[in-house]
Image (tube, one colour):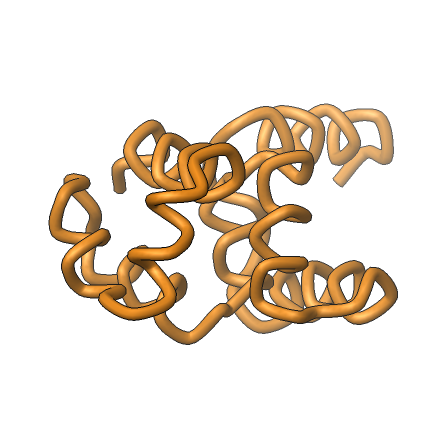
Length: 108
């Protein structure tokens, strides 16, 4: 997994109008510029917010991608919840640390 590359791509999509415009017409071209796993690439192409969340993408970055994909706020939050149910706990990043801490506190 390449969380840094995935996050960098999403950050650039959020901030760079040219990258955003290119992504809308040539997703493969944009994705090729980043070292992404097949799973990350699929999650981006399918706008799978739940999987991107489980892969460790920060929610502040992810919410802008969701908006770019036309996903409403309520649906964005639900897709993150559904992602954890479907794919399991967050695998990397700050949310993975939070999950581990929560489990220790809960005695899981």
